[in-house]
Length: 182
Image (cartoon, rainbow, N blue to C red):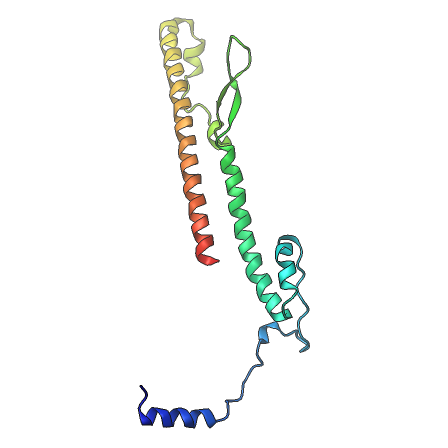
């Protein structure tokens, strides 16, 4: 309940004239020459809001276009990330790993190029490879290099699974951001 002094103060304030404005309303939507703004071009991604936005004032159309454009760009980036994530579930034929029985590359789970094209980090010197006196050591090195190749392939598959997990988390985060902002 308001006290009598608060009621009197509110009555005085209601009879006072409004202060003069220093800037016209919607000053950000007025052209340089002072004319009202033209309606925004509702093309491209904004075609979805065109039927609704055309029924509104130009100032509101501008606000709607700005907000919707940002929102739709964010949504498009999320959709593109979903599409690239779906590629991670596929398979590919590895031309470097040929199956001797079929003569074709073995089918493997999809691995992103930056992981798939990793070169062999270990190698053997040419002196040992070309010298016939080192045949026993060269055969031991060859066996070890085969084990390294197997370990690298396992590492690539493990990294690909991490990429899938990161992509899933990123998609969830983008959707959360999208929901919070819009």
